[in-house]
Image (cartoon, rainbow, N blue to C red; front, side, top):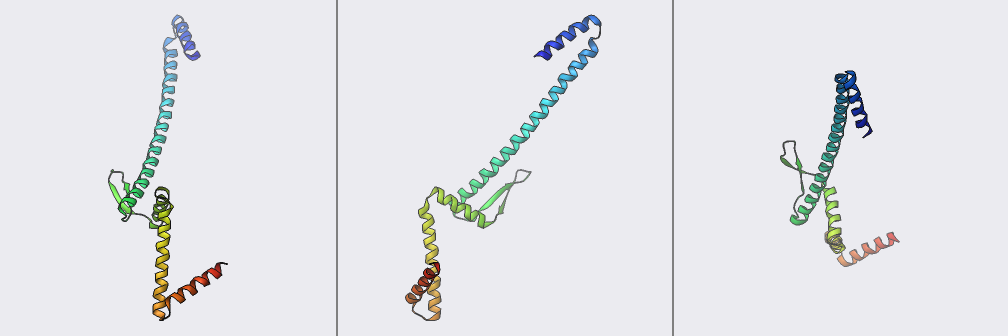
Length: 156
């Protein structure tokens, strides 16, 4: 505000002294420089906003992948956009995605499903032990109970 008043005073004085051209050019160049500086700041803010939008899109892609996995129970493919805007499907590390899948399962569906999966794994383990007992031609139940007791003793 004070700069504008000062510029007006300088212009009025320069009208009487005859030096309006140089002073006007100086004032206009200062204003033009201010506009350039503001444009630089705006461009930086626009670039920051674009980066934030890309980050949000990436997060949404991951959420979409996990939701698709929950819905389809198929292989998880991540869609990545090229510079052309085309989407390519690339398979990612299944361990990470499996972990993310179970985290989402735990958060959305609750712990009972997680315990069900653990129970399934325990049943598979028991089945493997049974198969080993069959191969050894030994009594299955006694052998399984012995193995369980040994594991319990090791833990204690």
